[in-house]
Length: 109
Length: 113
Figure 1 (tube, one colour):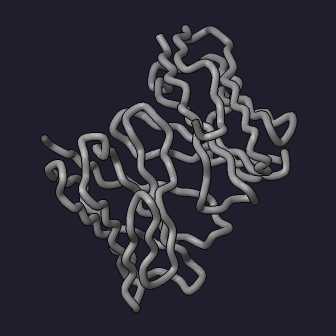
Figure 2: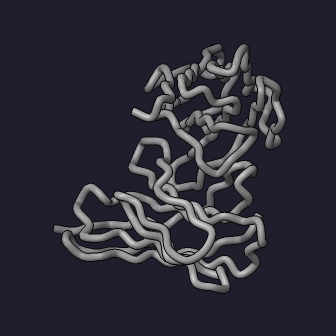
C-alpha cells in the first residue's frame, strides 16, 4: 500500500473553501485515491474517489495532477458540520482499507 | 443511515464477562470487517471476512473471536478483556473482498472496567 502524508490538522472558517492535500510519492499504476470523512464517535464515510484529473460530486472535488504523486480534496463553502477527520487512502480498488492518522479539520464560526 | 447496523451502541463490561458485538448489513455486500479505534489513534483493521471466510486476522489477541455465520451478519465475541481494550469498535462492509469503498456502522463504544 502506498504511504500517504497529510497535515495533522487544519483550521478554517464557515463559508471558506478548504483544500486538504495528500502526498503519495510512491503511488502505483493500479492505485486509486480515496477520501473518507469521520465525525466523532461515528464510522468513517466514503466521500470521493479518483484515479486522475478531477472528480466532483455533491460533497467535494478531488484534484489529481498528471504525475499522481499528490491529490487535493476541496470542500466548497464549509460549515461547522464539516468539522471532522479526513482520511486519504491510496490503494488498488480490490484492497483492504487501511487508515492513517488523517487530517483533523476544525471549522470556526 | 449507511445500511450497516451495529448493536449495542454502548457496552460496559467487566474483565471476567463474556459479551458479543453484532453487525448486520442489508446492502448485499459479501465482505465484512472489524476495526478498532482507540482514543486519538488511527483505525486498526482487526479482521476481514470475504464470502463468510476469514481472510485476515491482524495479530488480534484470542480474547477477541469473530464469527460470520452468513454474508449479512458479523459478530465479535469478547471474553476476559482488559481495560486497554476499551475503544470504539467499528464494523464495515463492501462489495468484493476488499475494495476501497466501504460502508461503516455507527460503532459500539466499549468500556472495560
